Amino acid sequence: MSDRPSILNLSVPDFSAAMTGSADFQLSNYRGKKLVLYFYPKDNTPGCTTESLQFRELYPKFKQADTEIIGISRDSLRSHDGFKSKLDLPFELISDADETVCTMFDVIVMKSMYGKKVRGIERSTFIIDANGKIVKEWRGVKVPGHVDEVLEFVQNLG
Image (cartoon, rainbow, N blue to C red; front, side):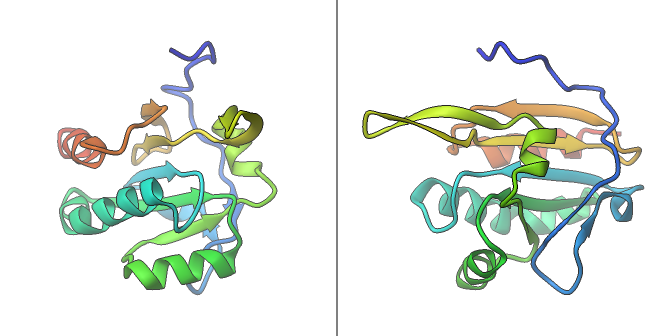
């Protein structure tokens, strides 16, 4: 269990970020809808590919629940464009190379990789309600079954 404080029920300040597609991400553009922000470590890695494909497969059900999905990692827009195209993702990806959004959501942690300590993104998902408030957070996500759990949560969210 993390010793970080929960950010549940906090209102997320409006922010903008570089995103795939024709415009930058602006949180205020999503007011009135539910929003899934999923943070993942790296494009084109097995777990991140699997998680993104699962969000893609259930995307129509998220849309039926008036919910938009946005993926976030520190990869470049160029990397994101290739990843999105390769997987045929129907949602956009935020490039957070300077870690501004990652810091806002407190998802940068020290990890062990091949015996070395490295800073990286802890796989995490946040649900922001139509009013811009964080109503659910998952940290240290394990991919199997996670996207189904997220979908169930947004379907039951008033």
